[in-house]
Image 1: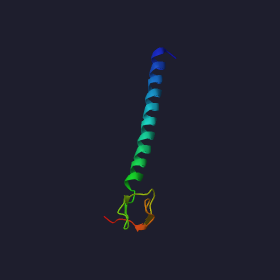
Image 2: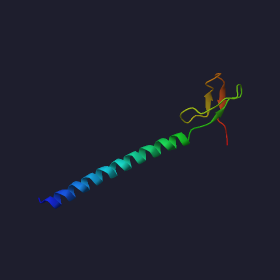
Image 3: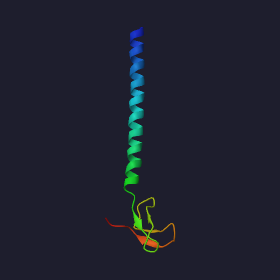
Image 4: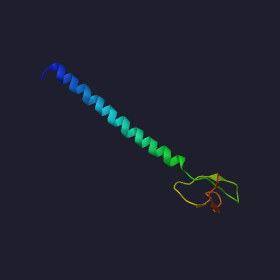
Length: 74
């Protein structure tokens, strides 16, 4: 294998590696953003605290006072 072909193969290998890493991290960051964006909001009827627990739930307990609250509808 001559020097030009080896250099070209190396450049394509490095470019493919960077492209693969870019796609992987882009998909990972997009999934994290979507999970945070879809987070539910709750407003406590007792203490007035606005909070957003992780996950998809219809009811949640307030972290300050423990009151069970329904999801805020927008």
